[in-house]
Amino acid sequence: MRARAVEVVDVGDRAGLEEAWRIRFEVFVDEQHVPVEEEVDARDEEPGTLHGLAYVDGVPAGTGRVLPDGIPGHVHVGRMAVRAPFRGSGVGAALMAHLEGAALAEYGIPDGGGRLSVVVTLSAQESAMGFYSRLGYAVVSGERYLDAGIWHQDMVRTVTV
Image (cartoon, rainbow, N blue to C red):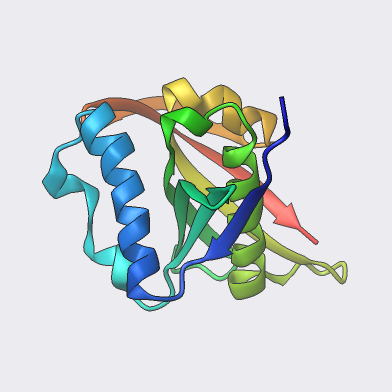
């Protein structure tokens, strides 16, 4: 089987944002039955929100966003969605690496040792916690909660360069 190239890009216009929404609706609304009114929120279009789109061989495969947390050097990654045909192929990992890099570039702060650092928090669906653990994320408290009818736990990782 031929390895498929994953390309992740920043969303820079309305068309890109609408592509991200299509992927999120497919994954969250159609597959996971998240209420449609809960999927798109005002944070999507706020200044400072960063979105990424992953493509495999030119086909839209996944998306995610970075939100500033209001604390210098802290962000929240959310709305991570990879379309079913592309799961397990490295799309999610490539997308997370891109979002972490964008978070460092936009929101990273000096860590005192001459490096740039950002604390990335995310609300992980419990079914995806193994994926995030493999990327270096750790459970914050172990407290689980329902979000849109799906069990989640908070996870965190400090990214430094």
